[in-house]
Image 1 (cartoon, rainbow over the protein chains, first blue to last red):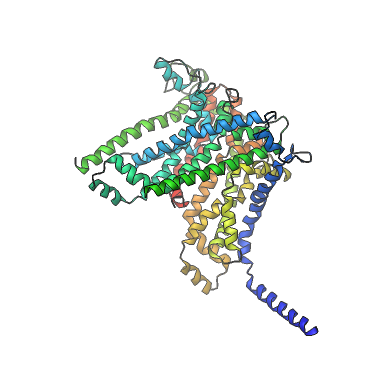
Image 2: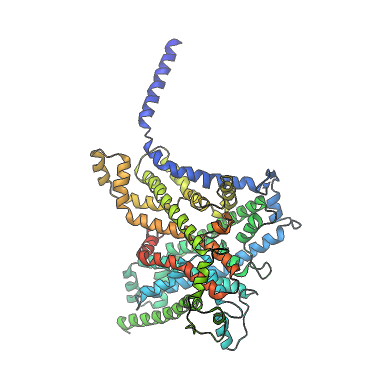
Length: 316
Length: 280
C-alpha cells in the first residue's frame, strides 16, 4: 500500500515536472489579447443572441422566457404584430438581391475585360470606377438623393428635356427600386471590377493564343477561356455580392426611408426598427429575426456554392 | 483579318464602352461639386448650369460654422479618433496573434485557428443586438469605445497576416534563435519589418471599413456630439432638408478625407485585393 502511493506520487511528480518544462507560455501570451476580445465580442454574442431569441426583452427589465414564440410570431403566426411586416421586409430584401446581383456581376465583369485590353487611359478608367466605393453609404446616398430629386434633380432635368414627365424616383414604385439598385451599382461596381481584374491576370495568355489559332472568335474565347479561368473569382464575387445585397440598409434608410409606405423596408431596417427604433423595443424579436436572416443567408451561400461547383464539373 | 488589326479593334471598342460608362460615373461627382459652389437659390433652378453663375463658398462656410445641430468638424474628429485608434489596436493585436498561429508551435494551435476561421461564416447581423447589449452593460453607448473595441474580436486580420507570415523564409528566424533572440525579438525585429506591405494593406482596409461604417455607429450613439461622420450626414440630411447647396457642400467635405487617403495609397488597394487570398 505504502509503496504504491510513493510510486504514483513519483510518477505524478515526473509528469508535472515534464509538462511544466514543455508548456511554453509565450505563444499563449501572443494570442491572448485577441482571444480576449474574440470571446467577449464574438463568442459570447453568438450564444447570447440565441438566448435572447427565446426571450422577450426591452433591454432594461428582466428577460422573460417565451420559448419559440418569437420565431412563431415572425414566421407563422398571422395575428402577431410582426408577421406581416417581417414577410414584407423579407420579400423586399429578396427582391433587391434578385434585382441587384446580376448587374453587379455583369457590369464589372465587362468593365474589367475592357480595362484588361490595356486600352488608352485604362488606369484612369480604373480609378474613376473604383472611387465611389471609397465613400461611405451616407455620402453616396446624399449624392443620389440630390441627383434623383423629383423637382430639381439632374436626372429629371434631362428626362424633361427629352420630353418626358418628372419621375418620382424615390417616392414611388417601381422607381424607388430602380434608384436603390442604380445607387448600389454606382457605389460598389468598382470593387467587383478590381476583383475580376485580379482574376483576369491569372489566366495564362497562351490559352488565348491557342484558342485564336484554333479559330475561336471573341465570343467563343470569352465563354471557353475567360469564364472558366475566372471560376474562383466568380465564386467569391457572386457569394460576397449576394451577402452584401442581403444586408441592404443605408441606401433605403437614407434615400427612401423605407417608402413608399413600407415597400422598401429591408430585413436589416426592420431589425433596426424593432430593436432600436424607439417606441417599445423588443430585443428578443429582433434577435430571432437576425437569426432567421443569418440562417437563410448561410443557406443561400451554400446553395450558390453547390450550384457553381456542379456547373464547373459539367464543363470539364 | 490580321491579329494586329483585331487587337486595335478590341482596344477601340473597349475605349468607347469605358468612356460612356466613365461619363455616367463621373457625372454625379461633378454635379455635387457644381451644386456646392452655387448660392442656394441658383442650385435648384432650371435650366441647370454646370458652371455656377455666381461662384460662392458660402455653403462651406455655413456648414463648417454650424456647431449646433450639425457639427461636421466634431463628427470628423470623432471618426478620425475612432478609426485611427481602432486601426492601431487591430495592427498590434492581430499581428501578435497571426505571428503565433503562423510561427510558433503550441498545444491547440490548429483547433484554435480553425475555430477562429469558422466564425468568419457567422453573419454579422446575428451579433448586432447582443453586442449592443454587451456594450450597453459596459457603459460604452454614446462613447467612442463602442466603435473602437468590439471590432477587435474580428478574425480577418489574423487570416490575412498569417498567410503573409507563412511565406517568410524560416532561415532568418533560425539564425536569430542561434544568436539568442527571444520570441518577442523575432516578432518585433524580423517578422514585422518584413511584413510592411501586408500591414499597410490591413491598416488601410481596417481604417476604411471603420471610417465608413454606418449601421453600428447609428445604433451605438445617441447624442449629436458623439456621432461619426457617416451617421452625422444622415442627421444633416434632416437639418438642411431641401437646402441642397449646403447639403452638397457637406457631402463634398465628407468625401475629401478618403480621396486624399486614396491618392497616397492607391497602389496598396490593388495589391491588397490580391493579397487577401481571394484569388485562391
